Length: 111
Image (cartoon, rainbow, N blue to C red):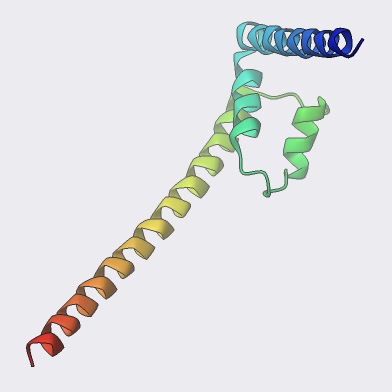
């Protein structure tokens, strides 16, 4: 009995996965802009809330145009670039601090 239930749940999970894969593939084929928007939403950081406009696009209240998608992607890319720049600055500071620390240690070690 337990095996049958487990087998049925695995089959249903597999069926759901196949169904979702088919829907995403259909979205990619029929509406490339909406597929890009889907990927944009899927890949975004979970703790960043959706804007009201993004919610309206996702719910179908606002039609997604190519220009609107380009605008959203531009904002997303700018945000990603600012994060990359912040990490680069942090790495540069750490490298400089590490260099001075090594120099100081080297200086006191020779005394």
